[in-house]
Length: 269
Image (tube, rainbow, N blue to C red; front, side, top):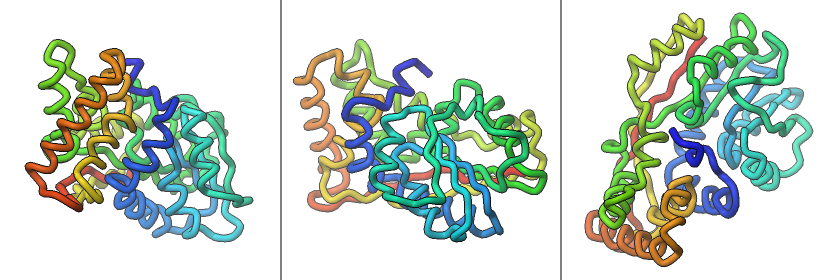
């Protein structure tokens, strides 16, 4: 992982939420929220909340007197999440590093994290922090993308961008979001962090977009992939989006398009 891989700033939060969230995150957010709420919980911590798609799915499922602390390393993403969520006295928004949580031991019933663990510089440390702030019967619920070959839109955009930039191919998507989908490694890291009960479910779903340009814009402008491409100039950014759009159209059709996406959902206690 490079320093660029955690840079969700500038226009990225808005494009991320407008394009990427409906493309790939909403399905998994609803799934994760249901899993968190399937057990009685009062105090919930969300780490790496991004633009708040899980927050929007989970908050309506919590009790009226719940305490829901929503955190992210990037304040611009958290600002976007807070603005969309609207007023809710149960929710506290707080910038925080998932590897150094500013909370007391055993203070939450559940910790959840939607597709954030891949960005942890030290996943074992991040998992250990989640365990530290959980009560003895608490649960850590999170998800991780499978390899890029199982996530078709991401793979197409990466292939196109790499073809147009052969000397410096942008590998952010393959390297970071889709670079850690190995169940046995996930299990081993959780065990190293002190978890003993671990359930890992593979969840395959369908990514849907209103037109072929939507996934191209989502990945190129709505993720840190943009930081790899932008130094080559705005003309190259547009060229990659246009070429990826054409490739998606060729593979998946015109009009509304759909493709496979796949990840792992983990429950640890």
